[in-house]
Image 1 (cartoon, rainbow, N blue to C red):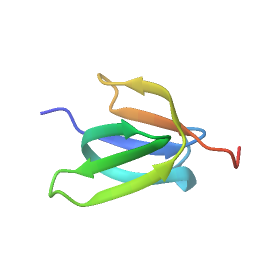
Image 2: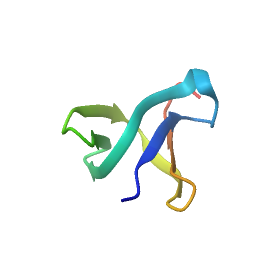
Image 3: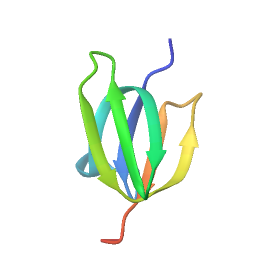
Amino acid sequence: MCLSTAYLNEKKEETIVARYVAQVKCADGKIVLSDIIGAETEIVGTISFIDLEGGTVIIKTDAA
């Protein structure tokens, strides 16, 4: 099973928004991250980078 960590704007410990992400859904400028137990985190932004092998998702937000 491939699980990822999601970050805002850059890959730094302090920018983590979700851990153990199992599913990513995108619609209407929003990204919904679902973790392994089904908890969801919704973020307004766009996908900047995904590394499935490295378990990294970076989401670009307007705050950058």
